[in-house]
Image 1 (tube, rainbow, N blue to C red):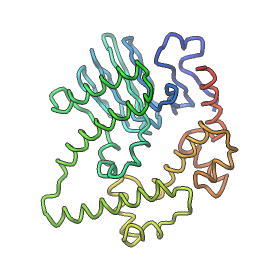
Image 2 (cartoon, rainbow, N blue to C red; image 1 turned 180 degrees about the vertical axis):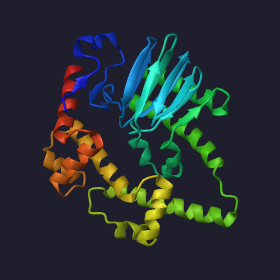
Image 3 (cartoon, helix red, strand yellow; image 1 turned 180 degrees about the horizontal axis):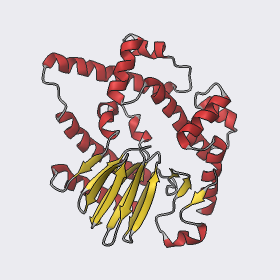
Length: 307
């Protein structure tokens, strides 16, 4: 499919925050140098038709409202509210007259690998819409505001600074989420704790050994369960199957290698855990909407245009 830029090169100077790269309905988020975070600020009416991308998108209206349709359901985000749209979920955005807002996009994969993060994985895989009367809303908007000040100042270690704020935000959200999902029975709580520990052990193993052959039998043994029970447990606590999680991890590594190294495609395939080049090409296209070669070309062209 031919690449379609919603903002052409001659118009980029009009947008301090950057531009969008599209392949059909798949958006490839262009980040600032050495970061995986993008902040968009705008006050003009605008509409983004239905699209998907691998980043989390945070909607922060300052005045007016933003209308976001996610999987066919409309959400109206008013001024002083905040809404998180999870990765790879079809959504559209409409901002009318009087709308002044920030849109923040960032790569979630860096957080998903942290030990203990699986406890709140079901929360981050859904829409999070905080109204102005939520006790957390003001705190989270304040943290985003501080983060955006740093973002525009562009200090050294900007990516680490910004993710420090994002991690604080997810700690606040996660604490509230877990408080609302505490099992009532003590024995049930103990089973839950053991299950979380097993899933965390597995996630940590996958994040370190994704390039090795990993089977359902071997990973279930690490968790200490039968493969049938483990499969159900993993899906319950992560919201995705073991095979899909492993696949996503390998594709994330492959995308990083494509953007940041000159390794041949076959070496990218092997280093990210794929033994078959054809399987790698097909799987990568299923996830990103383009082949590994096309993906590298998009980001190489973007990097050249920003020099």
